[in-house]
Image (cartoon, rainbow, N blue to C red; front, side, top):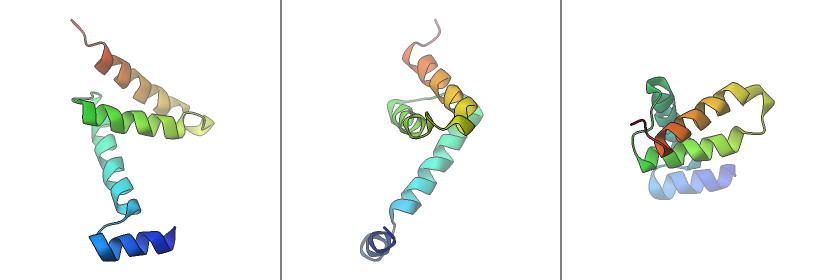
Length: 77
């Protein structure tokens, strides 16, 4: 994995870890404002929730992400 990341960094100027860090920052901003604004943000939040849903130490965080996804899918009238 390290070799692949290094190759990506050399060829494209960024690697998988860089992209993951950017996505984590965006998700933190979404959680802070407690609202998903568009489909792109929804997909990022959904991916993160799928990554952590079985981790008992992140149950509260996963529930927060699920709540925001539910609010986005069924907006308040």
